[in-house]
Length: 311
Image: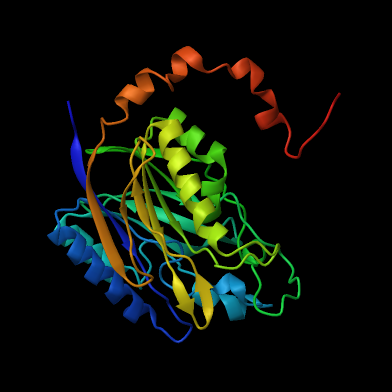
């Protein structure tokens, strides 16, 4: 038996500080139409898709950095994308900077939304594994200040049932943590959608540049295989105002194999007809959770954070 659904990953090239929301959303709509033309039913867009990756810059007041945040869902800037997706009957994942007010308190998150082909908002995910620092480290090139501008996500790792299967979402640095995917898999996810903005340079350690994309691929492939699920990974990449980010957008099968990969660092759509039952044999054998998991020995995963040596 097979359940084939065409999925698309819409990679974005640079979004510069001078680019307007309207210009950027027009690019997303163009890729949405291309994906639809190839028969795609779902499109994964990148993290923080509507703006440049602003956490590389130092801002001190909300008046400075709130310009990068969206209010309302859809926000005014998102409306044309939502309208076109509903018209075409294409669902999508979109990453954005979210500003909300709850109980009189302003809160900001690095967020993604999952929208069904009929335009229904299925749910949100708020990034949990925030990289970087809250305060500047004084790097001569750029900073990585996600902890300065975003709260740690408070929605956990939910999954969402659709007519085409059950999907989960995560964002960028979440992909490096196996717990991210395991929780979604335990909640039945068959497809993991994620967007990322990953600098080519690691400002915290002088590692070779090629390792950035290698570790990215390693994270995707292991997550797919160890959870018998598909992975849709969309980059915003290239040189944003001189700051380089990796590409490598990919679709990875439950076998851990990359079945489609972006070839550029520009706007580029990749698609694949995904058999959502492909991982069934993996879930029946090597990773049959019900038969083989031994949760009585996994306590440290949730009871401690840092490494602790007790003997």
